[in-house]
Length: 338
Image (cartoon, rainbow, N blue to C red; front, side, top):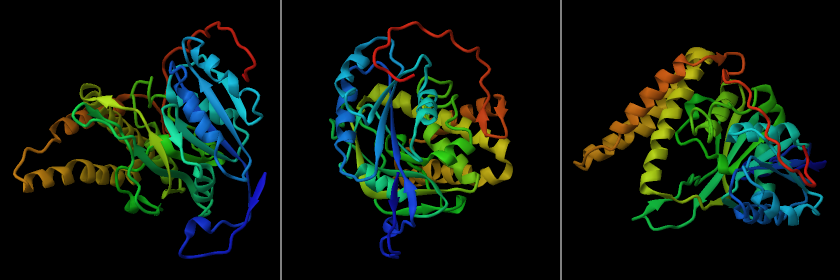
């Protein structure tokens, strides 16, 4: 455990950390990426910080390429490897959170690289204000050929505290650069396992968790002081499919929040609709060009209807899983943590 204490400074809110005991768990989830995760691990383990931290890899792969690729890290006492038989990013993240020893949990993806100050800055941002439960940082998209496709990112250009729905402005953040207090995540029921890659709704698990924390009385912080480099290139066809999935999952997530949290969730939907649908449409109308938002509206509406009809746990504001539990796969394990 590490005690952080800083003198209050109104010009530097991230440095305003009262005396608290902190240690950190970094959770990286991977599936069938083989050696790709090694670059992520090397960048995280190379972070320059005095805060004690561990790195947990939750591997949902169908083969042993990833376990072989990370074998060189097993001698590092900060590294823990978990072989999971489940499928789905939210399921993997929940496994990592349950196994984490840290009071602060940082998350990034297996196609990312962390800045050398990422752990330190994200942890300090998480404790800059007493009620902050979720932090997002700047996610830099690795440059690519825009004629072929694009790489998603999250441009965070300033420090921003989101206390209520009035402060919300989509996009809210990106799970590739995310930090949460373990106590907050456990209180609100973890990630919704029907959202995210490998689930019914393929995205939106990160924003859903942040909005559920906000509706539960916690705050969201966005920091531009550190960054993650994201190399998840998508060609145009894959990118368009992902955008449709984004709005479909967003609609489902908003429907669930309105059902579970009531009218307090309606303004967040209205603000998202304004920033993601209305504002782009108005910009294109001013330029006398066709607004590219018709497809967004359709998928948002389709997702909203589907989400409204799905069973949900109203206490935790998560979708109920009606699927039978999968049979655990039998795979060899070596020097792993279960």
